[in-house]
Every structure is written in structure tokens, then in C-alpha cells.
Image 1 (cartoon, protein in one colour):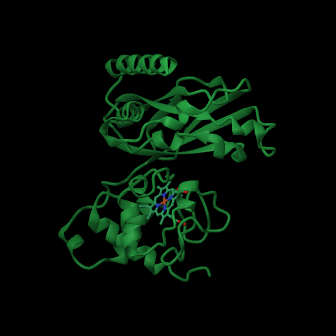
Image 2 (cartoon, rainbow, N blue to C red):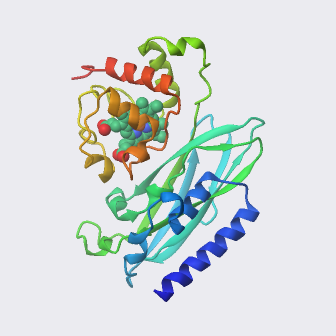
Length: 287
Ligand code: HEC
């Protein structure tokens, strides 16, 4: 118990220091909430309840930016060597090299991918959309641990090096002019344009990419596209996709399915409606 308070106090001290050093970051705020349980977010019980094991792993960090993304994005530390079950806080820095504000979102993946399920708490701190002013720089924390079950699962017991990779994409949320037409009927053509700008970096109709293939998604059970490695949260959600559930998903994937791995949302209701109309038009393509 005492140990916990000391860890927590140390972490808060680090965070207090960080906030004075770096620009405001939404992610940092969320991390703070996760640690303290403030603002209705859940406490990080799982992380603190796992007993650290003697087994060590080395975790390497790898970063890249998608074409057209004018950011420099780098891990602050190349790697950490840590015990299984040990809670670690690491940082990534991002700098906008352009003269315009740019919004970005990141996806992550874990190699070897069979170790992915033992990488815990990542999704809670997965970078949300970050807007950076011209030539601004932020440091973004990721808090994680590797579940000691890694060592006992025959599939993964040989793993002693894990790589966590992040790719930052440019979000084009502001690119479509918001004219009055958006209050008319749902428009699949506009939805198709919005899809090309906001979704196609990760999704295609007929094959899996960073996100699952979406042809026939209306009427499909969430997390059921063959061959795609979904989060356990979405796979086990019991959701069936229809206009209402898709609208809620696009408005806030993690609000609807805590632990879901899709890092973007669409804030505008009219845009969501058009995108859903477009998704419905993909019915039957391919199959
Ligand atoms: C940066 C990558 C990325 C972007 C951009 C993205 N998605 Fe996703 N999407 C994902 C991932 C990853 C999943 C799987 C989530 C999980 O397993 O929890 C997903 C899941 C989904 C699902 C559930 C599909 C199923 O089979 O259950 C739908 C629907 C969806 N996305 C629609 C969209 C739409 C529409 C957009 C654009 C507004 C979009 N996504 C943008 C990565 C992305």
C-alpha cells in the first residue's frame, strides 16, 4: 500500500515537472486523469495489481510519419529494459515543422504481434488527435506494462524483445467546407469524399489495412471481419453495425467501446450521417 503511494507521488511529481516544461497536451491531461482517477475516469487498478516478475524484456520504440505529415516525431528514449508487470512511463516528442496548425492522429502496432495481447494499458493513452500550432513541440507520454502472462503462454514465452511502433497521420478534419448543404438529406457522395480524406489512410472497402475492410459493414457484427486483429474490446462488444451504432462509434469509439483501438472520431453530426450513408452504399461490394 505504502509502495503504491510512493510510486504515485513520484509520478505526480514527474508530471508536475513536465507540465511546466512542455506545452499543454490533451494526452498528458488524460494520463493525469488515469493515474489519479479524477474526472470520472477509471483507476488504473490492473497495472498496480500485477506483481512484477523477475523476467525482463526489452521494449524498443519506433516512430514514423505518413507521407504529407509535416511533423518530426521521435521517441525520447530508444528502448527500455523492464520487468514483466512493471509499470513504465515513456515519452515521444512531436514537432510541427510547418507554418500552419496541423492535426494528427497515430496508430500503433506491436511486433512480434503475438505479444500484442500482453501489452497493457496502451490504448488508454493511445495518442488522441493532437493539434500542433506552427513550429510547436509537445512531449506525449505513454504509460504501459507488459503482462507477466507473456512468460507463461507457450506461444510467447520465447519473446524477450518487443517493438512498439507508432505512425502519425495527418487528420484532414477541417478540409471539407461546411456549407449549408450539410443540413440536407444524407449524402453518400459527400460521405465518400469525407471517407477518402478521414478514413482511407486506414480503411479500404475490400481489404484489411491498419483498419478492417468495410464493404458490407452495415448489418455485420462488430469485430468480425476475417483476418483482422481487432482489439478484444471491440471483438467482444456484441455490437451489430447499423446507422445508429455506426453514428455512435464515429462520434467516439472509446466512449462507446472502452479499449477500442480506432484513434480518430468525427465530431460533426452531419458529416457522420454522410459517412454512414456512404458505408451503407458499400453493402454487397466484394461478397
Ligand atoms: C488511423 C487509422 C484509422 C482511421 C483513420 C479510421 N479507422 Fe476505423 N478502425 C481502425 C481500427 C484499428 C479499427 C479496429 C478497432 C478495434 O479493433 O478496436 C477500426 C474499426 C472501424 C470500424 C468497425 C469495423 C468492424 O469490422 O467492426 C468501423 C465501422 C470504422 N472503423 C469506420 C471508420 C470510418 C468511417 C473512419 C473515417 C471517419 C475510420 N474508421 C477511420 C482504424 C482507423
